[in-house]
Image (cartoon, rainbow, N blue to C red; front, side, top):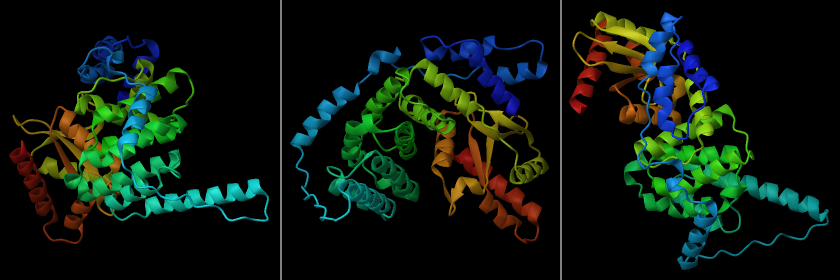
Length: 378
């Protein structure tokens, strides 16, 4: 319930995090309020929330943007990039300032459209190779990273070499100082979704974000905090890198992430009814203690291990392909969570429901096959 999430967030309003973020677990246990039995149960479920500290203190792996820029400039000097002529603007009778602004705006829209309309990952990277020296601005870089996630989502991940993204990463770091908070969080989130880039190459972007936050030069919206936290899980827990985020920023990210409201859908209710007919017991709307992700339900059957149920509705898919957020949630729950997860997409469930005879039996068979497949993959 939302009470679980609010209780989790209120923790940080009363007691600040120490210099080591791994004290989250101890802080959680200290927040238990004896006067509320329900809250005791809820917080007890959160006491095991912990994030791996793999390489010591926060500052032990900090690469500054300036250092990264010097290295990248040296790399560019060694690379033999193809040179493209700069297109000269035609003379106009209009005011020079108005004409230049209009032309820049048109060029900006044209390049963004080219990025968004690219058909393959190779097409996208070719546009970058052609335009990055003269045309690529922060908005183009952010759009480029977002578009790259579409191709990874479209099953190109197995064919994608991490080195393909090195030029894009290098250029991103050289102009990261000009990116706003939305663009920075988009870039980090896109790399987390794709999970193909080398996390160490992204460290300077985290360092720049930390510097901007410490200097109070950025204001992060809840959506930005959500994306940064998912990227943080990818960087630290999935790949063993040491966080460079300030503890106060991480606290804000966790609060934003844990206070999401999760409303039970008719799809979930229908799925749990069928699990009940198979003899399973269920608990709804729980929080994964390892990651902070909300879980639709957890089912148990006698001595069998618990299974997390994720009943994904239409908002989790685009043309039956999972969205970037959906991919991240499934992967990070599977890699970092404390239970196996079973995903029940709405469109597969609807195919069984849509005017078929023996509907209940067919649904029971569907869920039983899914559980058997889950056990075979363990």
